[in-house]
Length: 392
Image 1 (cartoon, rainbow, N blue to C red):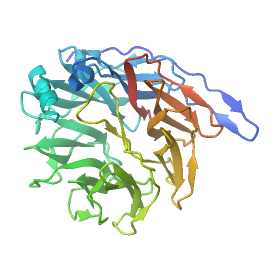
Image 2: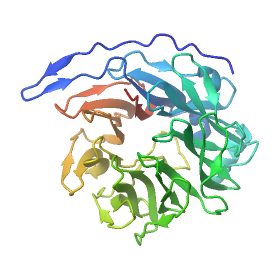
Image 3: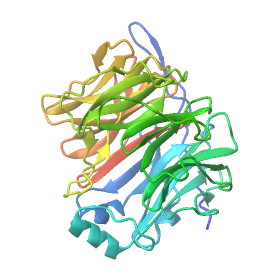
Image 4: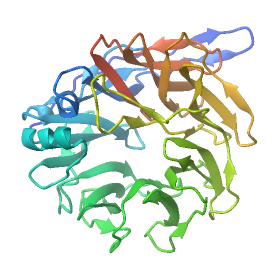
């Protein structure tokens, strides 16, 4: 794979802004937000638009937008997607996808996915910002033609996690930093497991399997099902201190943020999304998949949760404490849809998407003074999604 020289990233000067009651720090110099751009209105259905996706970074003030590893998308019908960061912020995780036009046409006609060898290829790369080198870690000792969700294992710099499609079912895996020694953490399972995450100490994992949440040891042992009595339970994530697990629970398209303790007990409903279906449709053409799940996320200190909920005809941003005290963060013009909130590590800012006047843009909100900065400049027929703060 040819190397891409990223070049020198623009540096943001460190400044301070005084408010009436607080001294608010500006973003750290040179901090980036990774995200994905794509076309949203091309005729021909889902594939015609998805194959335009490109992984990008931008400074937190909206300057110096750059595409990462464009060579990965040079092949026809291929694309890239920004998927995460290394703990030190020097490596970006990129997804690289390809689908045959014939398989895409079959999916459009049948209104469903068909994941078959030769029809799909999805891999995950580690992209070094300083050298431009992109390494396909899921292709090493390959276990699947569809591997996604790579993340750096907490407290273990030599280990990664990811999810792979095995015989039509999704399985959580661990592997070495170089892609070797891949271990199936639900080996032998014939059920579809997804939403794989690790606790911050690296000792526990969580995932949903056939829409039921499971908590287990890091090696997959002693998996315990979280009993909710609901048919749809998904997207579990651990609190920063590892004491709680946050996930969505309820009926199809009527799920709400819930909490359980680390041992799976103490179930409580944290907030209500007031009729919000919980997905953001990221295309402006008919899409059989129906959009991208819009899930709640922990605040940086773990004392609260950010989520989205319906208010009249809008989807607004909210914050709720673990005691259930709810605060509406946005009050927007009619027709506005917010999605995918992501807090910064210092807890002072929130990145998110917002569809306004038909265009999906990314914004950063200062949670101290409630100011907002738009960081993308999409035009009609284009969109920006899936923001990821670079660790600093």
